[in-house]
Length: 241
Image 1 (cartoon, helix red, strand yellow):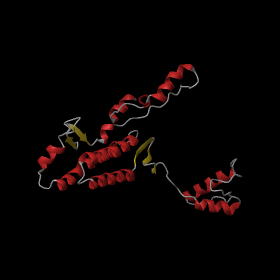
Image 2 (cartoon, one colour):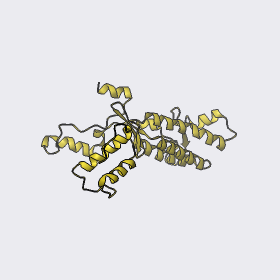
Image 3 (cartoon, helix red, strand yellow):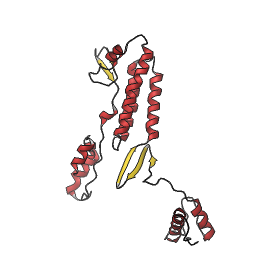
Image 4 (cartoon, helix red, strand yellow):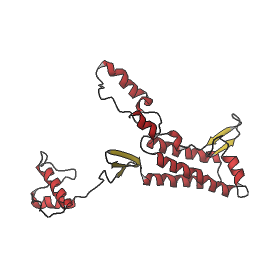
């Protein structure tokens, strides 16, 4: 193995040290996932030069729509910026496609997408992303309704679509049907789903002794036993203070 020079940059020294560890352990005669076996000083030098720094956790990396980044001793998992932007673009596309369609159809399409996305991210640090999406969903219907009802005032639009559910800042529409004369269709607020933290398995729990049989049965069959109730950040910290 080529020796590390005293004046070599720190990055180069780390690469050479990494190659040295790989080629001197018990699996040194086993090819890697790429099927290449590093033999000889020249092959090891080429391997060190080809190493690239990827996804160091302090700088953060993105994996299945979520960004993992460590701040000090705390790991923060948040929805990725690309994922939030992609959802916003999809919401805008649905609203533009349904400018002339019945509003309940548009609301159903939006709710399917928003509910699925919020349930996927409700176990991580997602409050800021959810608030951003709710703000966008609140603002976009204004543009659509102004095109749909160019002769109506803002007060009429607000009274028609933002008071039908009896709650503020929620886009809704009141429809009369045969079964229900006053049926309300409303766009869900992703923040209302809440942040649900996972409950870790007890350290002393063992699946084999009979005294823990009920504990593991509840975790398998009751979803609520795995999750904490929706709490604010202050309430969550107070639980473990």
